[in-house]
Image 1 (tube, helix red, strand yellow):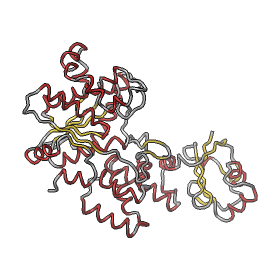
Image 2 (cartoon, helix red, strand yellow):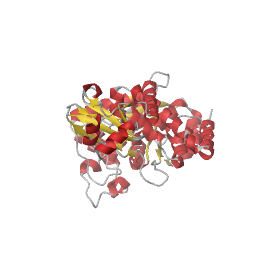
Image 3 (tube, one colour):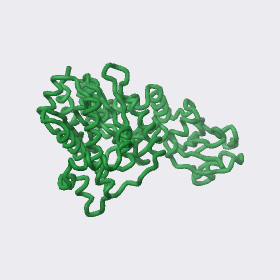
Image 4 (cartoon, helix red, strand yellow):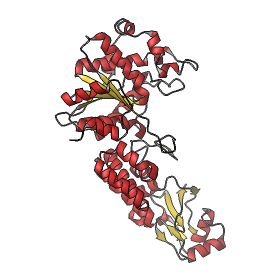
Length: 420
């Protein structure tokens, strides 16, 4: 089997380690429990969140046991790491809803059934019952203020303002690591590069509450960026979410398939579980046959299948093929609505109109003369059906779900008509 740490290094997934030599010896000697935490600041994760989780899944595939911590307690406070201003506090009810959403997404990524099946925990179970005196006496005394001021997440906020609530966040996360060490035998914490300060605080808490033989470790994953240095994980319409209601499987698939040649091999290494030989073969196709986009197709298929399942992947491919061929008749009304939600749209009444009047009012063609010409030349289609009769009347049978239609002029000029 491939050496895990060597594989992580090849994939570009090792940024910092608290003790690289000790970590390697530990992994060579035994199967361990290790954890990664996610705060439920929203009811869904986006793709920027999942790199540490996918790294944890790689550990699981090598026989180690992942502990998935959802921060029902820390999510009520907010991590100051990587932020220039205080987070907006959320209600307990919203946090609980967010926790449920994130749990479902964790279950899509990890194996929960095998001998080393993943285990999910919520830090509200031990932080929520702790009173303030207990917190200050048992843990507050362990960490020096100067030590905390040395953390980037805290130091970077001193000029703009930092509440005591967020100041205490790093210590609370340190209590998490200590609790998991004591109760779950957890030896390693994995996190993004912005979590280094929180991870080392956890190691400090463990060191001060145990004897000198105690060994725990931390590793961080580098921030994923595009080849041009810009932020990864956003599209023109915003963040790429794992929740299908926020980012549909088709949009999710399209995000990955539109990856630049300069980024696609890097993303295959970071996000997929393909073997090295498969990725290196795809790298050759990027160099020799970039027009075939084999690497992008593989990346899109692997990621959509992982997050949304095979059925959703099949649907995303079907929509993509229908749009490429122009054969919209193969799509359901719901799939059309999904595929075209970002195209230009116009609102119109449900009144029946001739095709010429209709396309002028919809601003699909600029004039009646041009409209007649477009229809006669076969340039106009409604919901995938070509219209060539200038006397055609657009009516109720053309309205999908009595709400909308997709009109196309030429090969790629689409418009969504919304009926009011």
